[in-house]
Amino acid sequence: MLRFELKKVLSKPMNKAALLLLAAVLIIGSILTIRDVTYVEENGNHISGPAAARHLKEDKNKWKGELTEEVFKEVIRENAGINAIGQEDRTLDSEKNDSEKSGSEENDSDRIQESNRIDARTQGFSDIRQLLNLAFCEMHNYDYYRADSLSQEDAASFYERRISGLKDWFESEEVKGSFSEQEKQYLIGKYEEMKTPLYYEYADGWKALLDSQYLPTLMMIVVLIIGFLVSGIFSDEFLLKADSIFFSARHGRDRAVVSKMGAGFVLITLLYWGVVLLYSLIVLGALGFGGGECAVQTGLSNWNSIYNISYFQDFLLTVLGGYVGCLFIMTISMLVSAKTHSTIFAITVPFILTCLPPFLGRIEMLTRIMTLFPDQMLTINKNLEDFALYSIGGKIFGAVSVMIPMYVILFGILFPVIYWVYRRAQVK
Image (cartoon, rainbow, N blue to C red):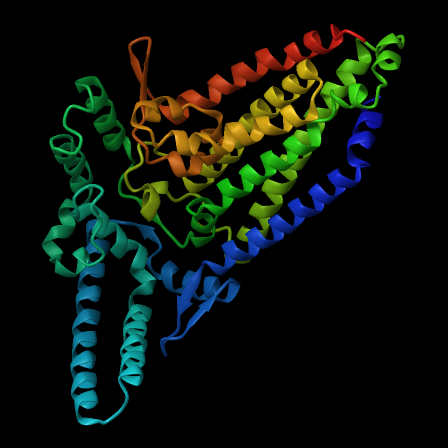
């Protein structure tokens, strides 16, 4: 009976077209993610994709290891030396351009190419230079050139600056009064728990996978397409006027209902994990699996994160959270289908729960509650830097720590309700 229900879903022409669309999205998303990794060659030209990843890995792994004070001093020293050479080159080019009667467009092109050549010399330690910018800038006020003004003596206060920057931010007019003393102490404690010195190596594969918007977007598309597929599982019998036969059969109100629920669960599980894992394997296979044990704080996107986890743990949290969110959203969709006997109503549920909350979250009075809506389960990798906190039983928890258990419980409660609702359907 389970196989029959799956065959009914997969045999529909529209559902086959939806699966082809999902395959196309997977391929296009993988290509775009891989192409986002770029490398600047010595002549100033850019390359992207696997070739860029190989060069970046070679250059960045020269700095592989713990980010100690001596490492930061060396980066500051090398960065200053490259900037000095670059300044000399720019001066010579400027004098040369003044003496030559060439077009302005050609001069602009030369300056861009020279800037690219300077970037090529720093990209081996660009991640560490980026961390220096983050540590020595005010919180949420990033300055790309901050590292250029640092001295080697500043290296000693790198890790202290991260904590002091948080404390200074609490006192700023931007957030003054937004956090209770208990919440402030919780956040400071999380910052102090970060293991130092940070371990560093090439991790651009994981960063491309987790720090971009492609994975959450892919998850959202997966949810919408799965919603299209499962929306008719419980309503088709009524649309085809076969409900009287279905419910009058010997096992129509027990095993047959369970088979429909099982078909929905199997489709959700196979399609979600199939797409997400295949996408991840393509991206990491092209860009490299190395760096999974690096802390998420070694990347630009999560420097301020309160979750002291590695990129690999971030990946597990993200895909598991996405799966739980997908299960919950699809359960609501199937429940609506079972209750209303309408495929159209069921199809709208995934759209409402994934596409509308980001817009509603822009309304100030709804911002906090929207951090717990199921669409957030599809964007956990983008929410690690959020300071959304909740107090439960007198203890403070981050939103990510609350959402996954909450939606596991809600799924466990609602999924059996489908059986109770559908088996009580009235035949007209």
